Length: 116
Length: 112
Image (cartoon, rainbow over all chains, first blue to last red; front, side, top):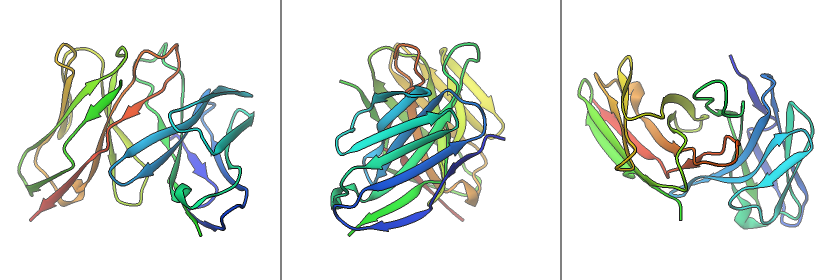
């Protein structure tokens, strides 16, 4: 079974702090993704990475950065946390589309982040 | 633009059948996924369609019409544990990446 592990289920931080969210997967997946999930808006892609040290902006990258130094680990960084970044953050991983037809993304349990 | 629409909420009775619709407009198409998400949990993969027609997996089936930009998820013999949000996601043509665009999700409540 695919295992995607996020370092914290719940996190409370203060405005202006630098916040690190960590995600580790154990399936040797090339692709990794960070989403935020807000009521009524669904999952929105912040950043994704298609290989070690490679990253691409998603739909809402402002205020975030990412790091992928090792294949199994993808970190999301809030450079200076603000209250509008209070949300559920979900990490996912997958193989790239190609040999296998479907290649679903597999998700971690999420980190509920509150910025006070 | 890219847009995925699905109803916000649905209710159904235990033992019944429910159909959750999804319409999409995306830049190219390379597959459609359905996920189930229980409150406070991770989304879990349910089904995948890339060609027109019906894919059946036990009590769950998913249908796709690419010409209409339309899919549905059919849940039969509903059980209380099927109360969850159901997320429709489309994979557009995106240069070999496995990016997905998600709808806002349909919250299904199953009543006895």
